[in-house]
Length: 72
Image (tube, rainbow, N blue to C red; front, side, top):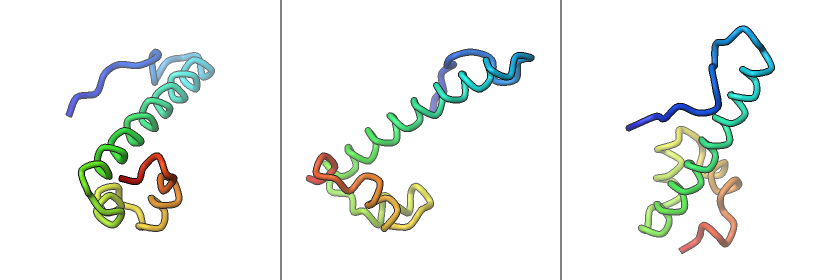
């Protein structure tokens, strides 16, 4: 697994800069998670298996990603 640098320093002196960097990181994580869920569904992975990999309930992951764009 590889993590790339985003935004800016996460431990800098300027709290607003740190907040902006955190927002950017969270957005990227959200995008990557959505892509991974979509790929898993396209490969026939069940909602229960996806939920287990994410450490959440099947209902939680289905509520978040259960729209038609994630069904195969």
